[in-house]
Length: 79
Image (tube, rainbow, N blue to C red; front, side):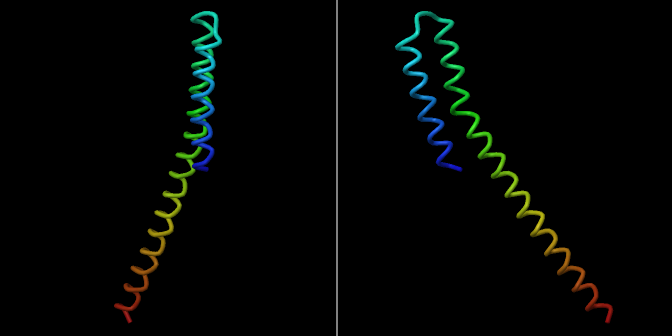
């Protein structure tokens, strides 16, 4: 996924440079700048969302294991 972010950043940079060089006015430059931002930002947001999801999944797994161990400890104390 990190590769998509890098590719998006490079594509965004190329679109921005070409947009500034080829455009015939400020509205066209602004449109190309918006497209360049989208090329760079959209892959990054997807990557960060998957990173956060993975982190939360690992945290839930850790908490479940911790609760299981605490329950086993509690049962061993009562017997």
